[in-house]
Amino acid sequence: MESCNCPECVSACSTDPGRLLPEDVQKLACLLGIPEEELLKQYLVKILLSPKDTIYGLAPAKRKGKRFIAAPGTVAPDYYTRERGVCIFLDEQGACAIQGAKPFECSAYMGCKNTFLGKPYRKKYVEEFFLLRWRKARSPEIKG
Picture 1 (cartoon, rainbow, N blue to C red):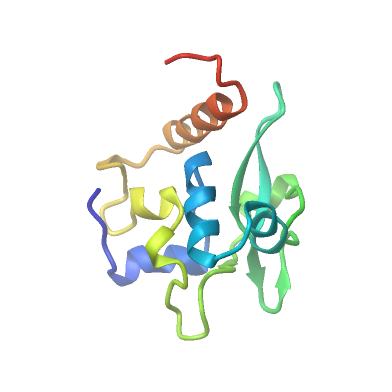
Picture 2 (cartoon, rainbow, N blue to C red):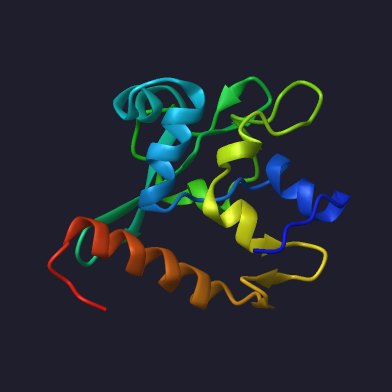
């Protein structure tokens, strides 16, 4: 997957950090040297992807100033995805502390080209993309 480190692409880290796919969790916990349960408690929030069938995804917690918009380890409020905030993994110098295992959306989104996986960014498509992956992770019997 093509990646970019231009100011437009990196600015997403300070406004709206990318979501994880189920397989990102293990990679990230391994990089940080902590169990997955600790990763969830210390760094991530649950985001409701589908109220109809109660499917959650995971995303880095984000801060506004010194406060979290939603505390790590909690279910984020409905307004969470609309709120701008700095990714918990962005260090004091503005660098990604988890570059080696960054969330999928961070790799798939290119702000300078407004694309997701090389296609024009469409919010509905991106939302469906994450919902499908988390639905499959929750229900392994679903094929497709």
